[in-house]
Length: 623
Image 1 (cartoon, rainbow, N blue to C red):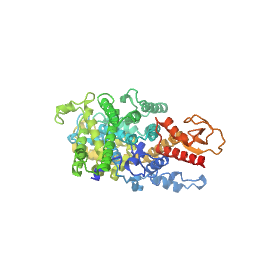
Image 2 (image 1 turned 60 degrees about the vertical axis):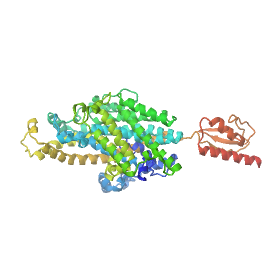
Image 3 (image 1 turned 135 degrees about the vertical axis):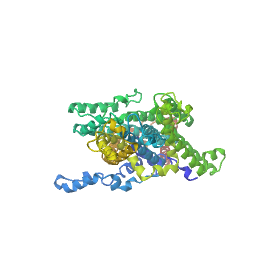
Image 4 (image 1 turned 45 degrees about the horizontal axis):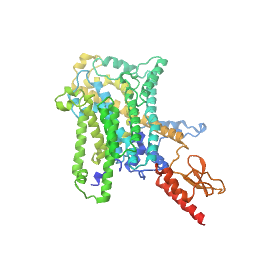
């Protein structure tokens, strides 16, 4: 039964949404930080730094340790640079130790989903334009190159991670802390998502100007006639045109920042980094999640759940499927919180013994594991369903193939991704699959891998393509690699060529992703936090937590109007975001609380402080 109590909220780092956006969510949800439902700003900052900064490899920042030019040591600096280029999982293996929470499992799932995206964009380099190897069409195996399923998983995970802490605060009626949490996420979200994209595109633009893609463009032009090369390397043009293309790429990214704006045509994006089309969708849906959290924060739980669920269903039946996936993640998070709250309440009042509802919600461990593992298996099978499912009658019955009003191919992907994310976040038995060190490392570099892999494939991947094909087939230098030759290549040789290319391209891709994560992604997270701290410095005043301090000069005239208090009473200083003198006596404290805060209850700490001040003033009066 102890294992069944595992919930994300009792037990976000990452990548895509992941992700580093919700580090603080993870510390509270995972139970790894000594915090209650509400924490102070200092504790929140400590949690963030403990999950983002303190886990940065020990070498991080070593390049800035050169104290002066006069003491500059070229050999030492060269050693530091070479050491910094080593992947972090080699130099600091302890940094990859994962936690055991459901949120960290979702982070690992995000990392695996990024592998699906990489697989789709690379495995097709070794497939014909009109045929596929039969083994690549088998359910489950098909996931290794099905990037669309990964995108659906990204969006459901983001909806879950972004909403789990705000929903917990809503359920505890901590509205002030809720406002701070959503405001912080809102301020950092754009920087978190867009700044790494701009840097990745900037790097690709400069590599193009240096001719890094010239040979890859020749390979693409020749092999794309008979091999399904999906991505075209960016062409090298004049310097002015190159930078105009970069600005067009940036314009495409920012064109989706308005949540209610029309959808951007993904066919018109620039070729520096084709995969960034999902980032505007991510930002749009994140803003919709924050707005929905604020809108439903004061609703009763049933109506809040009904509202979120209805909007999710509406989005699935219309052209707002990506936002609907975020809302579906919110529904899963709310259900997990309800289940955890019910279990805690029932344990407190009934000692774990109850009727039918308790037995249904808390099945024996074996049944519990079997249920969630079965849901996970069904979900994985659904997200590995083929496109144009109506044309594959042997895969699913005709009834299932007719689901949906819009995008019938995506309905199974939608429901399957929801089942996968919900089961991974809830079932601890799936933890070994998504909480092991390797998968945890994938989760950390997932966003960097998503942004980097396209550039690596379009450069190094295309350059090694002819060489791997010749090695796998034994073709000499005098053999022309054309469509006629490709038709004679067996499927086994294609698999061998793919594995040879993967050993090279995959290694470089992981290495570049690790560097991008350490030198771009983590600094962007810290920069977003620094911008938030700068913008909110001195303005983070709790309107409810009134600082009541005794007046140094009791003869100073008091100002009436608070609780009907006039002059002639002992005055105190009321600091509420500014300096204004207010007269409060012991008899007016209760009236002040009732009249001014009856519609907006003060926090327990404020109430205790005001009561203590009233007692103190009464003692002074009697004395």
